[in-house]
Length: 167
Ligand code: NI
Image 1 (tube, rainbow, N blue to C red):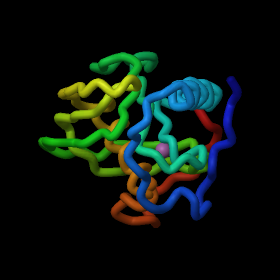
Image 2 (image 1 turned 180 degrees about the vertical axis):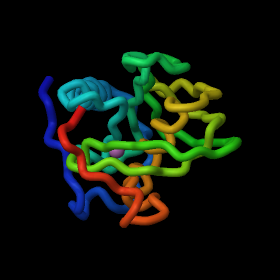
Image 3 (image 1 turned 180 degrees about the horizontal axis):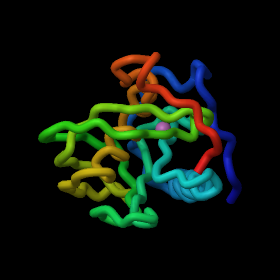
Image 4 (image 1 turned 60 degrees about the horizontal axis):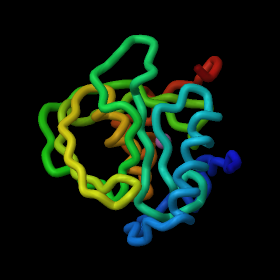
């Protein structure tokens, strides 16, 4: 296992659609383990998406269970071919991204979502989630469609902030 390189904005490879996963074999299992290792190597990253390491496949990892201030969560989630099926409410919140290391941004996201996704073994799972976990999942799924949070802010002038230090 090894930590992979993270593509950084404005790398063109972060744009564009990723392809569905249909092979859940050993190579994919090893990839997911390396993706998680790469997430954990990043500073405080609650999520990572396959395209961020140059793999254009629809797989993300989200884990908001280790937040300093606890939030409702489902623990460590591998979401493969995820699809949001319901959205409810909206709120503005601050987001960061391993691919945009020097900035954070205020982004509007749904407060609650219903989601279906396969797990790392291809089994279909359904989740209902809210708040920061729902935000993190919406952020990661955006990566699968080639979108970064900087593409989602209302105003690049007033909604993007330079980090003083990453954490
Ligand atoms: Ni991101």
